[in-house]
Structure formats: structure tokens, C-alpha cells
Image (cartoon, rainbow, N blue to C red):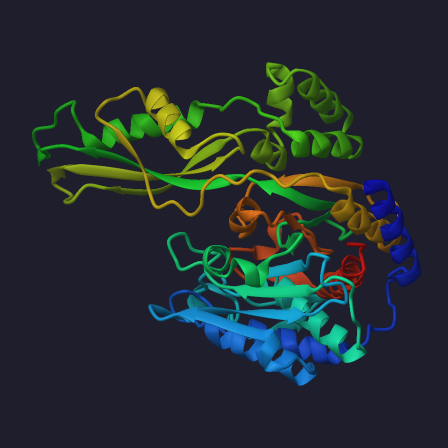
Length: 472
């Protein structure tokens, strides 16, 4: 069966694709897409001051203008979070027995303060080959492409074999906020039911000259979990110092965490990633990767591999201090000292397992370790499914000939963590490439290359047409 699916997918790719070239004629609807993208980017969707509900309404208006009837547009929100709503849109397929394919993207963005940015973070600027503004990459690039893709399909009269669905949600960027993907998974499961979903999390890396280095598909992700380290103390006058100091206890605990390395762990996705990426690395790194694949306990190989922050991020669980809060007066011994430890937990390990490990590493009963809010339970990685991976990689190989293709586990957290556990395997797939400096994602002056955005638009449009016609 898988062989037939792969062969069918290859035929569909060959029939539908012409390679993307530098300086090509813009794809159909280029101006309309740019206007849609600009409108979405300039709609503030931060948790503090924005409205995902407004963004969802504006995207629904584009789909309605393209011909979607109200019956196929499903806005949603809850009374206690009126500005954190979203949208589900449906393009019915020809085969009622074939399960749908879901497109997922989040509308909310990380906070952005005007005083910190070079320009207004909610005004789209095109300059020197880049689009700049908050959310231009994460994740309004994908959200705009999905809306554009659905609108183009409707205008073209494309009737896929499989139903295609789009879910635009809020709350991905803030632990503890109302999360639209979680809400849909728990309350509207039938509405978003699908054979699999395509989400953010995948993509490629550029070198300093802007040349693509590799393109990756996300197959699984680590669990993000925060822990509070806390020390309490009676305190006292600072003129009478004593050894039992809350700040010193906390500082020593943080030093111990800094020095601890969780054991190297490999799964099917990371083994596949390191096997595929090794030939693109320097000789010393290739040798270290080969040694680690053969023996994850090889200390010398591990030390070499961990020098690369990207490799270190997926070799094992990682915990890092991110916030500190201590003391109550400049002339008093501290009565309380707290730190936040953010851990990215390798699949197969629980948040409680890591909490227990932190207690053992700290080895100080004065320091309590507590789990903070839980964003989601650990999610198993989706399978390395050839009917999903095959078309995406075949299409990418034709658009970017010779570019290495890898399957990767994300060290970050996406909303796929809510869908995979309820039976909708979710993959991070995009044609977006990021610069070595991270393009300001989650930081200042976020940007994306103009060519990257437009090439990614073409890639995902063609890919969803292929997925839509996959045999049931």
C-alpha cells in the first residue's frame, strides 16, 4: 500500500511541478497575497494588546471573497477569552471516505515594544530584500500562505480528492494562555479531524551568503516545561551575615544545574537527522556524529557534537536558567530567592522525571523544585510516514535541486503537541529558510527574506495540491 501511495505521489509531483528559479515571473495572485500578508502582519495579535479574533475575522473575509460559503467557515472563541479566537475553514473533497488533510498556523505573536525596535513592530516594511515586522516569520508567514492557498484553490475551482481544512489559532506563544489548538482538539475534534496536519516547525537554514544549506521536516518535538527553584529564609539585618543565605543557596543550585548534562538520547527522528546531516558537516563533526550514533555514551564524541548549539539542542534534555528574583531590601538578608528553569525535555521523559533529576543534581534540601504551569503533556513523535514525507521531499528536491533533505526534531514547542496525541499526526513542513542569526524571531526587528516568503508560498501551494489528491 505504501509503495502505491509513494508512486502515486511521485506522479502527482511530476505532473504539477515546474522548478522555482531566481527572478521568475511572480506566481498568480502575487499582489493579492502581499496585501493579505500585510493586513495580517499589521493586525496586532500580542496577548497584551492585540486580538487574534480580529485577525481571524479579517482572514475569513478573504476566504469569503474567494467564494467560501458561510457553512464552510467556522470562527470560534470562548466568552472568557473574546480576543483569542480563531477560524476553521473547510474545502470539501470528492471522496467522502478519504480522511482530510489539515493546515495549521497560529495567529498570535510574541510581544514587541516600540521603544526597543528600530521601527514600529506592527508596520510591514520591505527593504534590502527583507520584510520586517513582528510576526513576519513566526507564524504569520505560514498563516497568510494557508489563507492564500485556500483562496487560490477556491478561485481555481480545484476539487481535491481529500477534504482540505485550515485552522488558524491563538495562544501558541504564551504558556498558560487560552490555546486555540488545544481547544479544538478537546472540544471540536470532529471539525478538525484529519489523516495528518501540516504546521510550522520545519524549514531550512541559509549560510551567511544566503545560500540554502539544508531543508528540514519536523517530525516530533521536545516538551517545554518551566520549573521554579525557591529558597526561603527568616532573613535578618545585613550587618549580621550568616552562612544560611537564600541567594547563596540558589546560586549554588544554579551552578550545579549549569554543570549537569543530561544523557544523550536518540530516537528514530534524531538518528535519521544526524545520519542525513553528517555529510554536510566538517570532518571532525562527521566523525563525532558517527561515533555517537554507534555509542551515545562516547564522551569525546559528545563533547564535539555539543559545541554546535543546534545539535546540542536535540541530543538530550536541556535545562537552563531564564529568570531570577531575590531579596526584598538592600540592607537586609534575603528572605526569599527564586529562579525559573526552562527545560526542553526529550520525548519519552516526563516533566516529573526531570523535576526529580533537578532535585538530585542540586542536592540541597533548602532548594525546592516545583513544576510551574503545564502547557501540554509529552507528545509522541509522529511516524516517519512516506505518504507525508515522500511528496514533501520530492517536491523540494525539484524546487531546490541538490539540497540535502533532513527530518528533524524541534527543540521548540508548537501546537502540534496538542494534535498528535489525539490522533492527528502533525508535521512541520515549509519552504521557509532562516538566516544563521535567526532573523530576529522572538527577538528584535524580526524579518524574513522576500524571496524566501514567496518561494515558500509556491512550495506549500503545490504541496497541498499534491496532498489533496493523494489516494484515500
